[in-house]
Image (tube, rainbow, N blue to C red; front, side, top):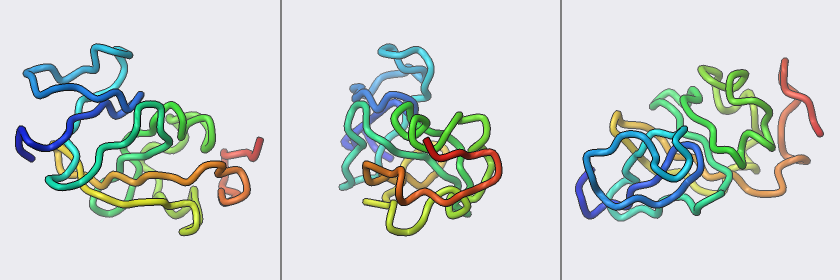
Length: 121
């Protein structure tokens, strides 16, 4: 990931110019990541998750948390246990460390799978 790649917060999606910061100055909760070169960063307040290369959830945005349930219950779980393919709007890369940025369609309520510990609202 280079300095020409867009940088964003893993929690609130706020854009951030390249710097030495690792924690988001806007929300104070997320880690600052780069979107893959040539790829679009999520919108501020957008519903997205960050996954490992094996598509296990490693971060959940605030908007996605409102749709999927608390981040703590999603972390480490396979993404496809939580959502159907129809819920995925776009997939890209992000990091460091290398990860997969998955943008979710909204509203997601009707697309989400019934998974243990995740209730439809």
